[in-house]
Length: 358
Image 1: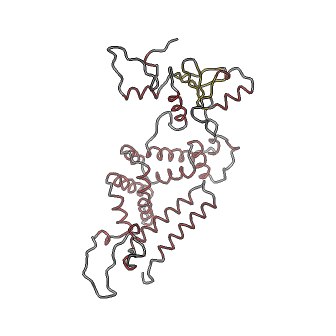
Image 2: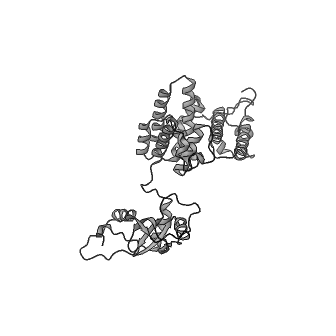
Image 3: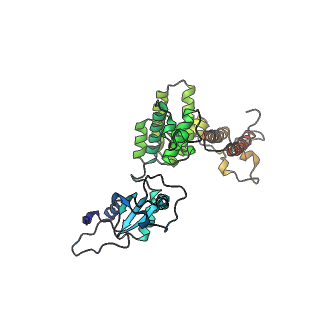
């Protein structure tokens, strides 16, 4: 049966001729048409389905229970799950159920885009970063509090290798597998979401806070958390204060650096460094020099020594990096060792700048 005109999707380069008096659709309307297509689940003869090779097949098999097929002008092109069709042919089956998108006049370019998008663009669209970390936390909390063994939610169930007796580790493994992420990425999500209310994350999502913001703010956030824990604050109090701090840092682009100065430098660092007249030898005031401004051996050594707050700040950043390395369950022990050695060398370099009387 012919489909209504508004269901027909036409690919770029093969647009329907515009009849006289017809209103040309806006780009947004066209975008909606390319995102949608009439889809059905059909039992097809596997020998009549063609593999689409305009883009190489993916190395890993599809997780879809059915091959994904595009039907255009009576020809069926498989864009994902070809291994399922090949297996059906080898087993002599004359029918295989497929998920079929019907796209009249589909060009090779459109087929290529669809094949790439199958494993790149989620069907429902891409969530905003704060929504992702909030939702991963929700899943982790559900898996941790459930009476069920989290392993049963993995694709391999209890038979899957890699699980241990540590429930939290198993939760991270399950989330990594089911969400198509590495354990390291899941660990980052959970770390970023820690001590943030759902309301704060919702506001950050509305403000389109991205991954870069959370990365930059993490050192400040961790220091705030540590200070509040040392002060004996409850988890609820810590969450409230950290959430407000994160919102302030996102509202004001300079707030992250301002808070770094307040937390790591101390009050004296906020005052401008005044130029002073030469003093007698041994009484020269310290010059504020950042690591990133070091010019090398040609600079006066006395001027290249950073102040105490800068050493503390750099040390805290290295320590945070080391902490995240140990949280990365996917990193091999050899890689962990190499990374930590580099971190320790950096810390040793910082420590060597500290005078004995400090």
